[in-house]
Length: 304
Image 1 (cartoon, rainbow, N blue to C red):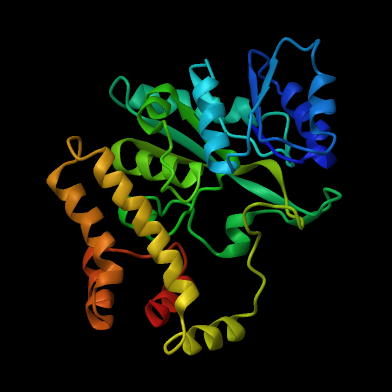
Image 2: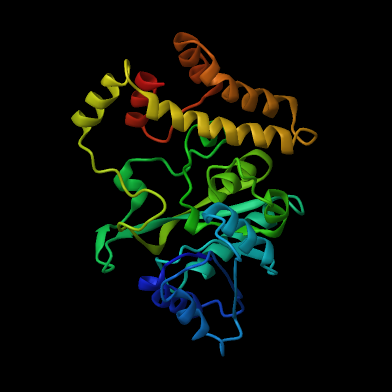
């Protein structure tokens, strides 16, 4: 867990983790120079042997903070946790069972990652939607490398990674969009990603979230915005450039590990912003650079 000024919901989240049906856990917390009541709350857990926390000397941001926290974890498996959600009691139990199944079916030391659905809730934990993926009309199984490059599908706070994946992915480079997008990319490229079709936590959406929430824009409004993007679409393409920067770091880090096929896919994606409008669209089809819903694909073809 990476914390920063999360006092408002932190105690509820920590208690939900400590009350998991899986008891043999270690909660590793790295604080990024909070100036609210976060440190006071963490200090209140001093008598809990399963909680271990430390503080950065200077602010480093969420990406580096999560990377550092993950590197401090000593367990066979590592789960990422936001500071403001609520874990349902069997979250770890269900994810661990899925992970054990994957590890039985794959060669030893195969990097593996489990991710799940969530219930999206308001600040007071009242439910907005029962299923994030069904509400967004996204296919949670669309996790091959071509689709992963095109859109982060995994909800980072649901990730459970095994030790081989943690060792391969760390440290998360500064060029990554976020720690979870990097782990998803590494797992898709070199290991196994498995979707557990159930909500394992309450994913709280409020005005202090680092990442975005659920999409509520009506269909007609999104299509109109996409059409306008044919002539003015700098923000949309800026996101593509950010992903390509992450891919460039991936190509450099794993140059000696990739198959020629994987290198070709990654290199093609990296070339997208540097290609002409027609060529970009042809490359989307050739390499299967699709998103996880039909509407998002239509929007992408208009805007890229």
